[in-house]
Image 1 (tube, each protein chain N blue to C red):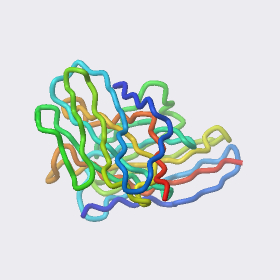
Image 2: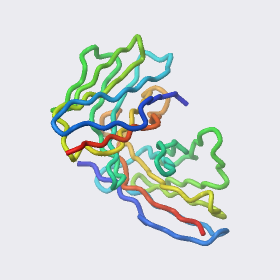
Image 3: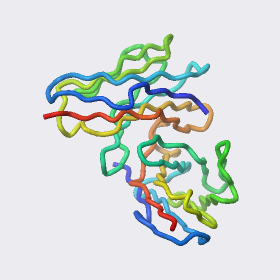
Image 4: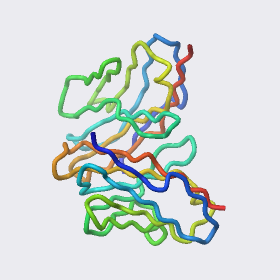
Length: 118
Length: 115
């Protein structure tokens, strides 16, 4: 089955630093990837949609200069949290869609990355 | 963004019993997909069941079935013969394939199966 990995699974950083989170599709070509944010005991909130080779589309209220998304290849998307602050501490989840061969509805979720900003 | 509402923040059920989780959504679209996802303590999202809006027949997957009421914009999940491994957060999700395939999730229901 389709597998999506995220790296790192856990990251702690100091306030003001930048953190990069990777999302990889291991056995399929992800034409589209999605990034979500989940606070404790809350739902997944869609942050942005990225299509390979083009700029990401951000949901209303998400700061694109703070959450930089790059989808430079069909197997890798990165989310960079710039100048992280404690309020950015959250669980970040990516999902990937195989737009070339998979059914339209199928998206595969990564295991998530827990970010703690001190 | 689409609105998906789950009105039951927490529920519990005795092992082997049946439980129903509720979900309503708001859309003007006629073609869309609805999903139930399970998120256990590991936080890995697991697809439980999906429903295509154009299909009148309710989807079923083993012990899991849905009651899809399109006119009422309601999509409930029934879990039969509940098992301890069913303990998890359950999220209802909406996807419109015509506007980018984004998923919009409900607020979630925390289900506890009691031995």
